[in-house]
Image 1 (tube, rainbow, N blue to C red):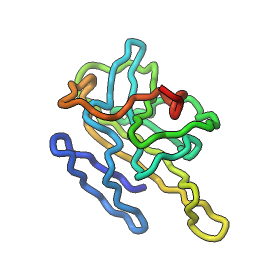
Image 2: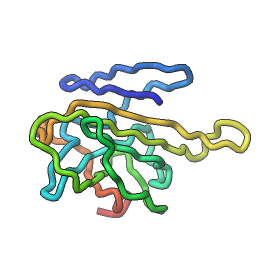
Image 3: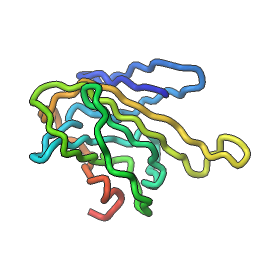
Length: 156
């Protein structure tokens, strides 16, 4: 699985390469991605692709915090879209202590209209690992929109 480690301050990216993996230069987890929400936490995940994709393109979503798998609901089929500027908000009722946490998010994207061979869709694995501070302050305003996973692609 291709892993993108996103650096804290400069948003530079280190790209460990494995044979057959692609470089990913679009941030998946931004500095303010990990938030407490009263009942647990939420994680904001950016689309690491150059175009908006149907939400149905998202498969095998997995989140770990400090090495522990976070239980997530099964993704239901959806006719909505994950827009490039949107960050999907994945919520959990798991409580987190204040401070910094090791966060890993991994998923696969099925890329429409691109084949991997005769009759084979292109499915790309993505993963991002970062140390994130719970409720980190925003350094500058963002143009992104945080959208709950179940509402991705719905009109604002």
